[in-house]
Image 1 (cartoon, rainbow, N blue to C red):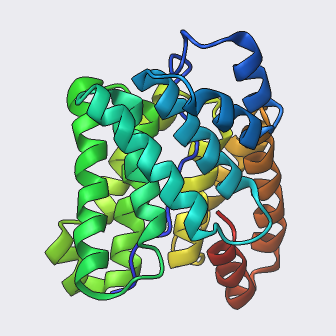
Image 2 (tube, rainbow, N blue to C red):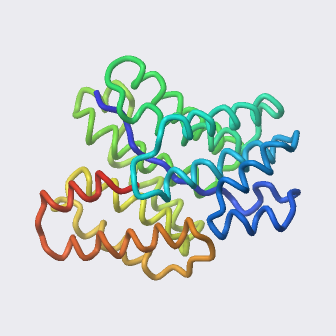
Length: 249
């Protein structure tokens, strides 16, 4: 089974709140390498998670598919955060995202094992922070893509369902209705799976992403991609829509 391609390269506003304003500004402006380099040199869980977040944002905002080296570096930094603080929310969330992206091209047992581990990390975040919108957004996409790629058997093995995806997205959207990335990732995942069946939901989510007011490079990229997919949805060309949604992150 080809495993999931999801990622939500964002984190709660509290992540790295003890770090310098200049570091946050670098991230918001899309200077991801600079932000990661500075943050990774700081010996705190917040800093390591912030560095991981920066590398994942770089991977997600690029015009090509994420490279393995960047994803593995992000995973290593997130793991450092979790070693420093085993219940660190952002460390676990960024590790889940990195794991999900790393196993994206992998079939078979490793893909299933690491895909399940990513889900467990996100669910552990919700045990600590039930209203973490990004963990809910992550899980919404996780369920969609496991169902879409694994079929009935794969979904049963992994415990995935569209109903759970809907529930997680609804919760994420209720918590952060103006966050472009949450709406974009949900719409993209549904479009990759079946743009005709989920047309109404996709269009609602894309419209919400387009209405957002981006305050960072990451959010702007997500809003722009939502606009692009909206145009493709209007064509009704299923093959083109699925191909485009599958290529974009």
